[in-house]
Image 1: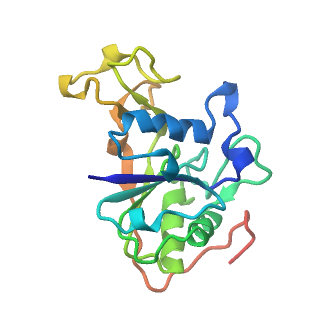
Image 2: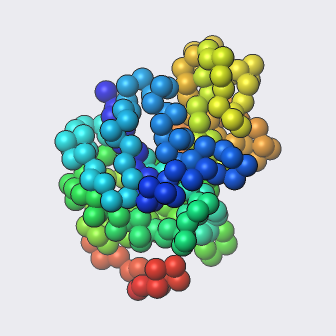
Image 3: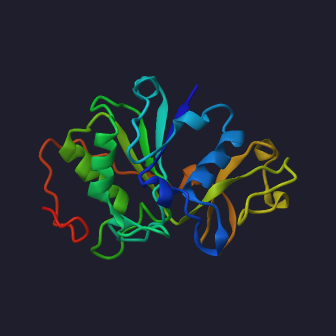
Length: 223
């Protein structure tokens, strides 16, 4: 069975700060996944910056490491969240994972679960691609790196529940019977509606290069 680990690359205060319009915090969003994840995720696998990743889980087959770091934007190399003193760039994210004990041999998926993390804009490169390049620079060449196009929902749609997460579609919008009562991720379309599986918006940016050129970063002021 697939096992999930959620890494929130923020300190405890920021990780527990509610989003705009009093929407759930990063911790609240991650915790809400548990009841819908078919035992793929348990509370002790939701980690914050400064905590150690569960290596025994990460070395098991078919593991997905979700990065829930905040809001993305097309062609931007950093994520934002209310309450932060500074945004989080793709290089700082890689450093935090390394410090948290992510093995260089990790062969699962790393998914940057943020809106527009797979979208570039003109000559500006997508966050997930820059992150993948930096992970290769650090020596992580066995795992795959993924981002998401468009806006992703942080909650689940579960048409069998009396409660549906804030901002998620009503159960009447399920089109396929096999998707009812399953608790699937959804992501927002350009028309503002939900209804497509989040995995349909996922794009891979894995970089296995042994020599990687990293562009200067104005956030962490390196390279």
